[in-house]
Length: 319
Image (cartoon, rainbow, N blue to C red):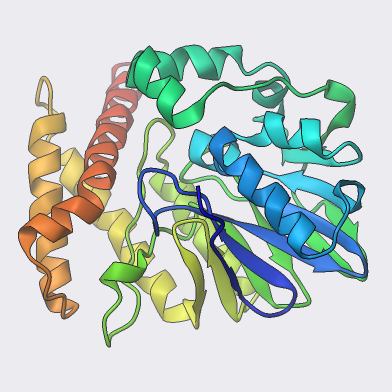
C-alpha cells in the first residue's frame, strides 16, 4: 500500500490506513521534543506505512513512546500488536475496559471471524497479536500522559462503546475522537461543511451516555476534532448539535420497531431514507449509487447496532 499522509499542523500527521477504501479511516502521529505517539493504529496492514512515516520523519522506533487506540474496534486497534512488536520502547494506552482484549485478543478474533468469515477476516485484519501486559497502561478518566513538551489527557467517553477514550491535546486545543464525535467523510463535505454521521455500530450504543459525552467534550471548548473517519475538522461546536439531534433520531427510529421480531432490515431502510433527506438538505449532488458506495457499510452497521440496543432494552423492560 502506498504511504499517504497529511500534515495537520501542530506536529500532528493524519495517516491514511487503507481500510476498505481510501478516505474511510485514518490514524495520527503526534510529535513533541523528539518523542512521538500514535493515536489509533489501523489494521495490521497499516503497520508498514506507519513505520515508513516514522523513518521519513527521522524518528527511531525507540522514540515512539505511546500507542493509543481509542477503542478496541479493529479499524482502530487491529494493528496494535504488530506495532508494539516493532516499537520496542512504546507503551500501549487503552481504556481499562478494553485493555484485556489487547493483552489477549482471542475473543475479539473469534467474534470477528464469525462476523466476517475467516477468509474476509484474514484479508482485512491479517491476525491479532497479543501484547505483553507489562507494556499496557490501563487508561482511567482524566489520566495525563507527558509526551515531550506536551500533555495528553485521556477522557472516558461512552456512547459509541463503553471502552472508548478520547484524547485531549492542550497544545492544539484538539480532541482525537475515535468514533465518539461521529464520522465525516471528505467526499460528503459541501459548502455547508462536513456531513456528520453517527456510528451506532454494534454492540454498545447508549444514547444517554453519548449525550453526556458530547457535552463533556464541548465543555473543553476544542478548536478542532481529529476524526478517525476522517481527518481534522474545525469549529466543532455547531457539529455537536447535529450529533445530539442524530442520537435522538436514532433512538426514536429504533423504538418505533420495538415490537418487530427482526427489525434490522426495516431499520436499515428507514436509516437510508433519513440519510438521503439529510444529504439533500446538505447540498449533496451525488448519485444514489455513489451515496451507497460511501455509506452502505455504515448504514448496515448502524441498523445492526440499533437492533442490539433494542434487544437490550427489551431485556430491561422484561426484568
